[in-house]
Length: 355
Image (tube, rainbow, N blue to C red):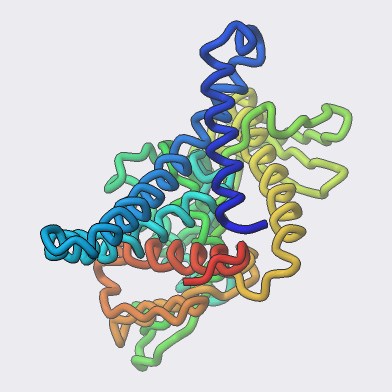
């Protein structure tokens, strides 16, 4: 299908939706779906029309070139239009890319130390705090779901819900292994150690996304205990939920109430199951694509934080920034923007759009 034919189809569908919404045929229970479809096409149609308008403006100016009285004016207009056309065309092509349905959602962040003992736990705590600061910069709500501390003020596990518009779109590329290279505070010889931390960012699932059958769950209750349990008590308030078909296990002991712990555990369970299904669909769609911004797998090393050199390197796009202090203070914007742009370029190529 040619690009022009595709654009015509999109505009025709948009105009059809407009007509349906303003007529009695669009009334009733289908109206909500019509509204969603219409809203989804507003951006692409606006970008298409802006590009088409510029093309038409150039053609009209070119027609005036033969008239001596308007030649200079026409040349100036053509120059101005051609200067803006590439950005208008790029904006249009981006607007036509398939959207990730989860992009506008809130997200669940999970951080755990991997290799490196106490040093990994310390870095996990610092990274958890860096994402909290990044969230604050965007005006998002950062709510700790579960926080298990290790010795030396480190972290065994940190789970948080980050609520706001477009959270997942900004944070989805953070899933993977984050490696840190530095001299630990406990190192007397001044040797650089390498440690790793795993990060998972899951789009928050809604009840309609994932139907969980009660008979598929094994629920164990036990007493909250061990290092980091904030409310160690003698009642069986801690909850462990196992989703038998998938093998996903979620444990929660942060709250005093068994009911609240179960609520939180189910929220995380639904999000993990939803993400599993998203990844399955994504992998099917991406089977013919050679390049992706990582798989989002927590076993994949995506980034290195080298403190002696003040360097942060994202290995997926070969981006190196010498601003480690700012990044650890929550300034991930440059990395996020570069990853988003890279993914858009790959998607454009996969859709047959080449710059």
